[in-house]
Image (cartoon, rainbow, N blue to C red):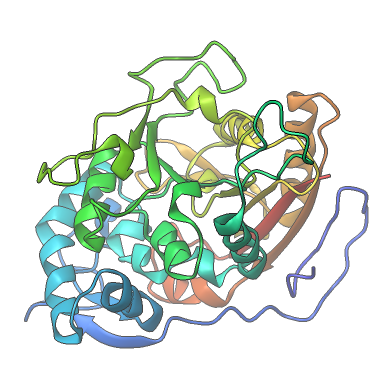
Length: 376
């Protein structure tokens, strides 16, 4: 599949080629939720670290549909509900800990996964899994039945892309989310009003500080727990304000995940940390052709280390060539004959506004790197 204008490389392609420009749909803004002092521009008087924290909330049409069709809110209740849950003070506290544009600019409402060129494939594979039967039981003479494909959202934030998948037909019991901050998971349940109904499970883990998914004996509850909120693991009559304490070690997902979404995940780290995270993710994939890691992140025409958003460390921004070479190194590190085919493009459309506003992290050569990394 061609992703659009930019440089497209496969695992066996050494040259560069130009393809027609990709045109990702811009969010359709149908409401702007704010108080009297709110603005879509950054607040005055903020430090450099906070110069893109916005008070207003722009709500795309597909996101509004989730709140009405999935969360059961009436049209005139949606704005107030989002304002109450994702309120200025609550979001500002989270932004102090994780000063990322996805929080400061309310980008978690944009449903990034559904706008990826590979989303139709993701949805088709996960929707088929809704009707998949369990593997055949011991002693059965029938041909083994194919188990469902599992999905993991790395850095899932409030789990907004998981809810979008459920609305579009994916089986929620086959969806997992991973984040370092448990408060985000809890806010997601409040935001989408599905604490008693969502069967997806959420892993709380820091993949940089754990011993590693590749270690089959890894079982450290302090580093990794999976929040199981399915009805079988929780009394649905409970009004507890926190997710169920039922936990399983993340190592149980080793070689179990067919599709991983990594939107705005790798790019906040330096190259060495990205390599660790990508290797961890690769060990979660089912080791067969077709297993997929897809996403979008900040890239650059000039690959290299740049000052991070909090100015205390660096982040590595890839171009297409460096990204291909990166995944070749990851495959070598995973071993066992692992190889990846990389499709990627650099797109400028969505990041122009940030450059126009003079935000320091939006350096002149910044681009959006849209990618799909497929095991072959």
